[in-house]
Image 1 (tube, rainbow, N blue to C red):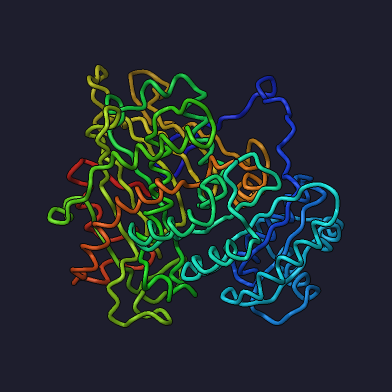
Image 2 (cartoon, helix red, strand yellow):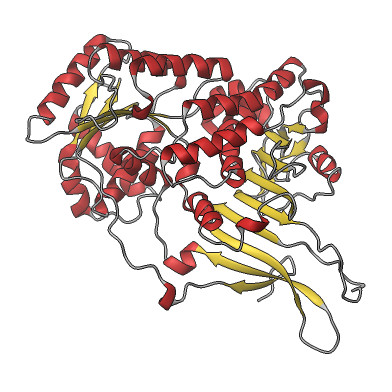
Length: 524
């Protein structure tokens, strides 16, 4: 089959003889999950559907329970009805049978209160005590699905009230853990302050800083691909790789997040967490074991090895953009400055592209090109590894095409897949070459598994596995990378905004910057 880009598509399948034997999945420990901000979008669209799907798969303990915490004056039955509707409408939960929901619903409770009010935590302690009257230890898992502005007050109140005491021993039972959503801080200094607040209330082994990208199947498979296949790791270095592209493209605008986005912009929203996490997994050295500390040690080393951005030479390594009016999927859409609740003269970037250099033995001289933007032509997140051209081409020149370098791509969303592009001979007399792409697609191979990233991460938190969660030094190291860019751009607002049309692939300046390395941005 020939693709639209002219390459031949060769599907890869898992032979039955090579299929991995079935293994028993890890199962959540007995615990109560307390969701602060339970009436919000995250809880209803992601967290509760993920829990319903985990229960459908038999991965929640029979003594698992949920307490939703929010300010709205509703009772537990109303809250359960809303969560039931959220599960039915969720794409992540798949087709959860009604019998599964009927079994889970009685374990869901609701507590109304203000996060600043000590009375909320007294009520919560009483409700938790009632749940924990049955035999055996129950852990407590607290999820902060709340605005970052109230993280500190929630952490302090949990600690001061005794609802979630600090525990020095990782093995102590019953355990107490907390999950904190991104953004973790607004800058390196604010991240450090939040880390200090959290560190006084909880030991590091109790803290789970969540980035849902790390729960995606293909992101996890990147480590398996690199370190379980001996043919790739020897060429995973500067001698064989020309450059790496990491793209997180979105077709949506700011939608209902204008208030947050006007304060954050694309660099805080996407680069400090998602893109730098993907970069660190791509560039890290082999850890000694697939455990939390060895994996996170190597990721932090990568972040610390990134060459700092010099504000004086920033234009040589970074480009920013903001979308204007345009056409997307056949419909006219407004520009960023015309979105509701956005300043009519806003200088907030909705697109950025970075040329990142890693000063290490493995990666010296290999540029990592990172980009993300809103209202781009297509929704796609991928990591593309482009190898160097052959040092000498012995075949006759093909007047119609040049030899294309090998390229390895990890598609993360909306479809999870891995592809390898290579050169092959076209059948017939003479030597003519074309590109062929070997594709491995998760859904085609394993069926529609419908496991959301939040399922993986919630389950990991229930069993105490921090491997896919950010550590405090990693968060601060990531802020250290992006802070100089944010500060320079905020000090000198762009004069050419908007500089790309909605529905395009970003500003022309992004390609002009990449041209210096002989790089063409991919269009996933």
